[in-house]
Length: 426
Ligand SMILES: Cc1cc2nc3c(=O)[nH]c(=O)nc-3n(C[C@H](O)[C@H](O)[C@H](O)COP(=O)(O)OP(=O)(O)OC[C@H]3O[C@@H](n4cnc5c(N)ncnc54)[C@H](O)[C@@H]3O)c2cc1C
Image (cartoon, rainbow, N blue to C red):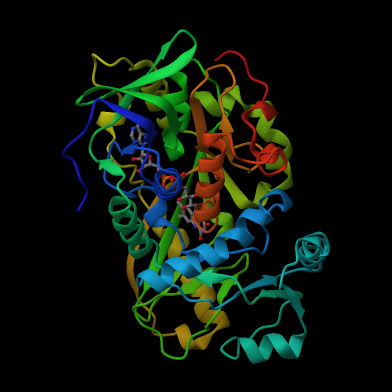
């Protein structure tokens, strides 16, 4: 579907990365009358944006991101009236396994109420009424009726079509290999098919943003985490709302099955970057140790080698790895489905119909960067969504478009400034 033709030698804005962030930013920029082109090293949304659980959620979001989550709800709703991508305002229930976890959720709710949320505490009987399929009890539950489920792959096909119809050029299998700086200003991108100039350049390259930033000497303390997901065969009379718990997370799919995963099963490998950024990550890691498993292995040397292969004349990592397609952790996925079967007999006959994994781009404070790059005028960064960029993607793209044109209010953009990480050399 993607257009590869009629590429002109100059655009008002060039965006590297055709995930939800790159495409929604492009859509809103084009809506402001700018001429925009998006380049992707692979195909549209083949990395995180089509591999996620399909949650649009407010529960558990950082206070700094709640406004983006709330502002994304009407955008998703409006888009769902233009095309079918399985948008289901089914709500999300967050289940606490322990008193400690429940007190954390209650504390979050107390702060979040100031943002005008619809989230409510459920009593034990209300939880039973909402989730009659489950045989166990929890220490507490929160319910956000306005949260929703979306089919990520269909949503991204919809967004691709909408962005193309708006007049954005999308070039796939055409990596941005390097960003050129002239007189301290980002002036052009070197792509696989040649050099194209632009007034402004946005890096929205997901887990690859750090490497692309490196081509202009900008350091972002971004790391990668692998998360695995499964989908089941159809389940009759299963739960309607999306569920979040430490034993399993799920969403009912349009095909009648469920997307199932485990929140605390993400995996990260020791790499040169994780050693380099250990100080920045340590506080958050110590708080959420049980959510992440750390492994050592050959990834260290692969990443070291990847870091060194650069330059527009050589092939570089963006061409060598068209799509990040990690191997899913099938043992953990099987165990997760077993937990679900133990707790909810309605899943007894559910079979695993498919599994996949995705590489998540994280930042030390788990908040994205939506920001100009102050060392280099005309360069912008929209990345580091730390596992929750899909649901907040539409409003993030809108905010990013305002940042690029200088129309964003200082208060809306402040939490996402790149300068909050003070890193100078690599
Ligand atoms: C398993 C999993 C579950 C998740 N669940 C949820 C969820 O339920 N809800 C939620 O809100 N979020 C979820 N997320 C997170 C969410 O998917 C991401 O935050 C979001 O998709 C990030 O979008 P993006 O556009 O920044 O990155 P991506 O979708 O990764 O897109 C980046 C694009 O940039 C391209 N690119 C990279 N380098 C270059 C280059 N040099 N030149 C050109 N193109 C380049 C890549 O090919 C890729 O297509 C989940 C993520 C995973 C992996």
